[in-house]
Image (tube, rainbow, N blue to C red; front, side):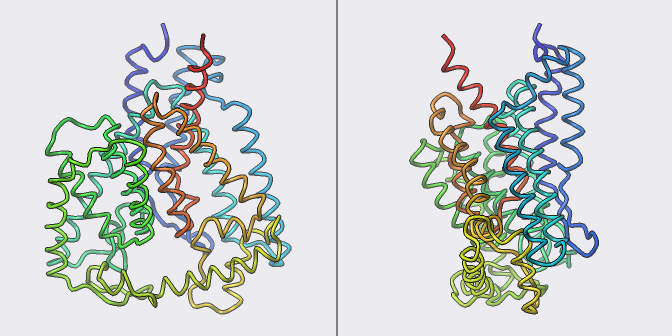
Length: 428
């Protein structure tokens, strides 16, 4: 009897996707030696869940079977080893360029990379060890996102009368942050959940009103993030999904008016602010016309400065990059009031890891996208992955999005499903 035919394994197969979906949508910002580090519940719960699952499969089917299923094939291991080696080189290069170790680069970029690598491998292992893990994880991800989005919408409505601590759900500049601390990260996560629901390829609860209420909550929270990066990327991703498949556009007929009504109440009762400065705590809705369209908004001007600075660094070392942490160190040396990393994943990779690092990272996701396109007719997870990967690629042009844990976990699931698709094609 196969291990996933047993009742216990089936229970694990139903519980673990929910645990992972919940863990990836809860984040805390911790301070470590003066550096802010964002820790996800997934950093603690996913390793424990994987250990439990792997141990049970070993007990039921033997260690050889468990290792054969859970250990990635050599192309993924080779890519992981090469990328890790190159980031190690970039870290050392940054040390020589700066004249000392960058605590920010060491903690956030280098050690953070090992966490991302683990999530790729864990996504692969869960998909291979537990039957239908991928579809169940995506469904659970949407339902968990419903709950967080609904709580966020309620918090904004309650803020009409009650002063709320701006830690979770509502950020310090009165933008929606859900349980991810950052409004852009929350906007990206909400966009993924909306795409998954609209695709019609995820096994969600059958209740029509639950789906409508969930989608309306997601739309409200998505707008309240004030994340123009997520809005732009989502718009293009929806267009791509329209080309790839027939998504359930009729399902928005009730959700959109409901979401619009909630937003209209907030807009009318909480005046839209025209300027948002970092650190301000105005009790007003963020997404005013002046904030969205003005060309001289602080974030727009700062990104233009970052573009010029990152290009200059890349040109100085186009193949290898200048090293991890060099850009933010330059910001510190220039006495910037709030030194920030490059808000563009591609520019950051080019500037600090060069063409080599850029090719290793982007090549991995391009390979996933091409494989998903080829297998889209036989696997709904691969089909819905196409707009999600495009969403990620576009979002990364406007934010530094590489260290979003859930996208790497999904990548591991996709690698496993592509492997299964290859075996299906090769089978006689």
